[in-house]
Amino acid sequence: MRDAGLVLAAGAGRRFGGPKAPYALSGERLVDRAVRLLREGGCAPVVVVLGAWVGEVPGASVAVNEAWDEGMGSSLRAGLDALEALPDAPDRAVLLLVDLPGMSAAAVRRVREDDAGLVQATFGGRRGHPVILGRAHWPGVRAVALGDRGARDYLAAHDVTYVEVGHLADGATDLDVRPTEQPG
View 1: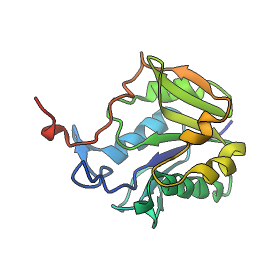
View 2: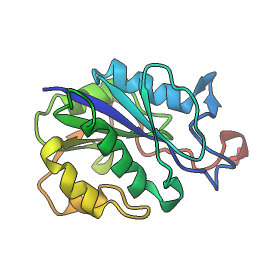
View 3: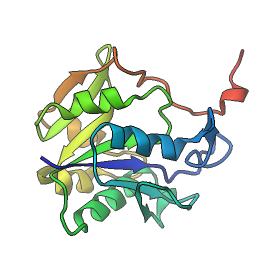
View 4: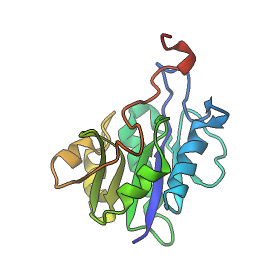
C-alpha cells in the first residue's frame, strides 16, 4: 500500500502573527519539520499545500492553494487534487497539519501500520493528526471540506479506525501563537 504525505500549511496564521510554514522552531522551519516527519514515517511522495506564504520546500512537491483564505477545506481539496494528479497516485493520504511541534515520525509510522481506509490518531482518547484518508474516500472528503472544516465531518459520519499514539507524540499542542508570546 502506497501512503503519500499531505501537509496543510496554507494559512495566514492570523493569531500567530504570520504564516506558520516558514517559522523556524529550534532551527527548523515548521513546514520542513512536517515533511521530515512524514518521510521518516514512511510516506512518499509528500505534497505540501501552501497559500499565504509560498516558497520552496525541499523533499516535497508544493501545491499552491490560490483560495487559501477560504479556510482549511480549500487546502485539503487542493492537496487531494495534487495527489490524484500524480502519475502513480497513492492508495492513501497521510494528513498532517504544519503546526504540531510535538508530532513524531514514530506516531506517523504507528498510524500507518493500520491498513484501513480511514485512520485517525488519538492522544489519550482525544482525536487528532495524523489522519489517513484512503483514496476511495477522497471524493466524499472533498464534498464536505468547506470553510475551516477539513475532513472532520466526513470522519464523524463514517467508520474510522482509531490508533492511540499518545505514548509516541504530543498531538494536542498546536502553535496558535508564537512560542515567545506564550505566558511563562
